[in-house]
Image (tube, rainbow, N blue to C red; front, top):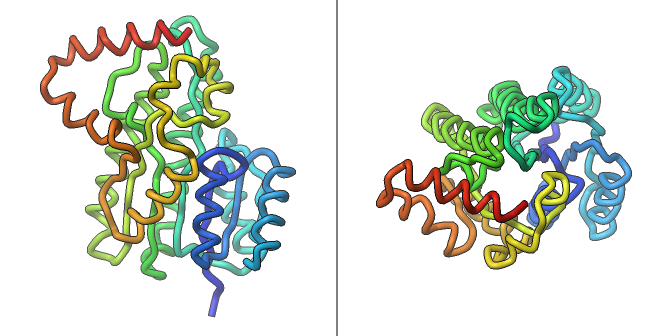
Length: 259
């Protein structure tokens, strides 16, 4: 029988790295992909040292339009199939969209939207065949308009909508589908986005490790969405009571304070 693995994108740091540790601790064989192969190898060795089977390492930049093909070819070469897919890779760029580099912002779309969509659809048949699960990493930002990080917020709104729709389509075929919507988490995300972490401190009450544990439990329980931390759970509910214009202005003020 073909060996089954869990593919985790963006596994070289932050939430992705912690998700890899959680899945491995629960007996999953892993395939890990990210840009930084040295970090992936270090994580793979760590997992193997703890008694797990060494993960498959696939160095890949998801901004590349051919990334999905390369990942599929690497998995086929190892004679494995997916039973779980975790689309964790993603990034943002801080600043007014009209002033930031256009190519960099299109890269956000490539990773957060196109690659996530490609992999979700590309491996759907394997997830169905193996009665597995799909975990897509969105953000609490996906519930809001995001002046100051317009493309990132919009990309996460897409992730939430797309994942919920896939859940409805895949549930009758035996696939669990969950969207993870964390708030600000202390990872390398802030540095890459160009956001000073000092203004996020009050909200950083859930570690990447706890986010990963909650996400794993939610996926295994076949929950539609998971928002780690009490404060994050309140956001979608509270937004119902405010006009969209008010939310837009408030988000804009908050983002400008982070500069």
